[in-house]
Image (cartoon, rainbow, N blue to C red; front, side, top):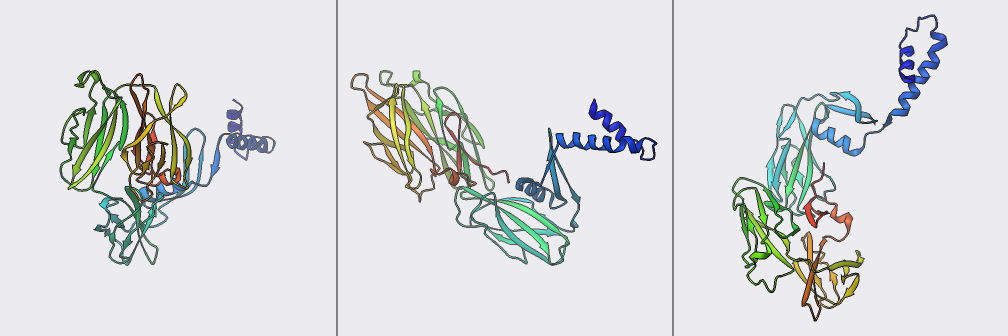
Length: 368
């Protein structure tokens, strides 16, 4: 109510008889009320880039602020939109070429720059707009920004390019699931053509809802359908492959058939050396286990559980298994999924992965 009262007084005409009395106090109250509720600051890099890319410099930001929502302030049309790149978004393979077009404008000057933590930009002909994507880069994909302007600086247009290392990608890369709990799988890639799915036949494999399409559902085999009911496995690793454009990629799904209570933990990690010391525990007590790698790169000492990463490998995860012989109740098995690279900063690159609740790894898609 006090704020409303201040605003009412502050909106009175300066020619009113009582302006000199109430004016300064009311104006000060209004400004104090607004300052207390709003914060003003320079736009962050993400905001700048969002407007730059999405609006092709139609909006030039100067100030940004928020209370319960986000507000930005700037100038409209700082540069004439006399030209525009076509297309504004493009998906392509590493090492391939693409000819960008310019609608309108004269004497264009083309350039390219890496964005979102990318490590390679490729090259572009500054006069023609012929772009060649980098042949190699870290991660499974990277993104670059194509910019065209002219010497007179009368127009400015931007396009975003996503470059894939391979023609097809799959999500999730690896996931653990309880028996009979389905997992949704999605594939995406470059070019036209079908997506063909297959599951490795092991005698213990689950099923797929379809063998064609971008999306399928995997259902793990239930315990009652295993042939040897007297020797049920603790877990089963299923390999699901999708093929598109002559390229195949694989997703690994761990079907947790039974829970023995054995757990695998990280005891010590040496990121610089690329090593991880693993231990297996049962009821909080360490147990001697035999170690092996179910999927992924690197090696593990079978007796000590010391895992050593292969820094040259492109694998985004490793599944390490522990097998503890109880002498009385048989062999208990468990596993751990380690994201690769081991350093979190390296995993923040586009095309790498992050760990989600439930043991799922998914590709990181940079916002920019």
